[in-house]
Image (cartoon, rainbow, N blue to C red; front, side):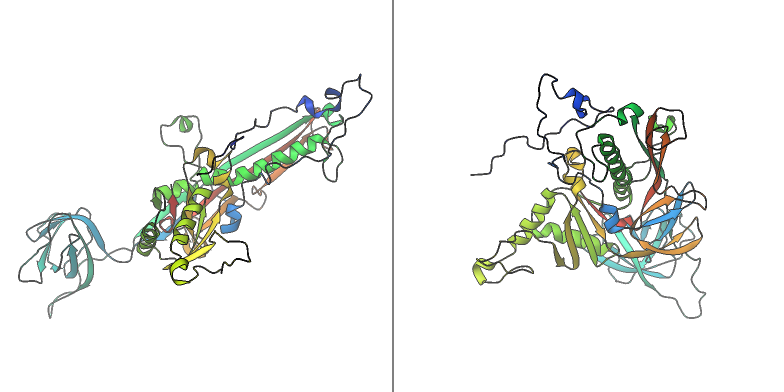
Length: 440
């Protein structure tokens, strides 16, 4: 029978409170009528393990400074001339915004048949039309919606050269930085109270633990804000209120990359992803950052290809035998391209990506790419995925932290408290988003 699960089932616990809990103090937890002190464990038990969900960007990208309000770069367009969505009336082809020129030889296809033809002088036609002369005596045989591309050219003896010229296509990308802040505050009087919780190297100072957790939570937000960030659309309430948002990882892929929906149930599904990569940059090495569900789907497909039972062949890079622990997961595989699979904790955590379930994973190219920085005016070789943080000669906003107040060692304010402030200004650049695949 299928497994049945019960118990807490990933239930959420209350979020951190805005103020220190009274239960943190000895005076509120011990009855004065009792002559015995309770036997307590000085350290907390980490029942949720490492609660941080950051680390994704540090594994696949880099951090690079910038000093402007906008980050721009240009990416190369397609090298060859192609067009889809065309229709033919006789030998006249209707193609909105086409770039075909007289003398070029083209292939026209309707998905089943194809014809080869040469483009004629189109001076008597509209800008969205061109006329061809088929090489076959039967004329054009393609019908319906057509696609086509240039494969060469042909000119008669003693004729002039190619008319017109083509500018190299340039795709200008831009992202805007977002300012991220957080703060932890504790009153001076409360800092003098005895606590239950031991902070390593500092004794029983419960407020330092809370400050540490604020810092860790802020560090998570440094990553999540540029993964999930979205720009404020014109006319939105956020834009009206003066906020601009930022172009996050998912947003940039959804608007310039590829999206794969549904489950991976067979090798055919992986084949289709490979075919998609063939049409784009064809980057040889790719990393799959997936949640547990998608990881199991991929494992099931790969394991299903193992014909050990019938031929004795062992599938994968490991040999399972009766004297070793059975390995049921795959770390990587090759199918035209090298794929390396790893779990993305953010998508599995019950208080973050797993809560929405909107994204199951991401396929990202490994390595670097060369782009032209429009702001700096120079070429640069950078990882496909990297973070830009604001910095100048006098101000570094990569990760700022400062203390305000008159307690805890601070003496720069008349505030009878200690405030620990955190700030960062950053943006995420996705170079060549057409090489990324978002799994939903």
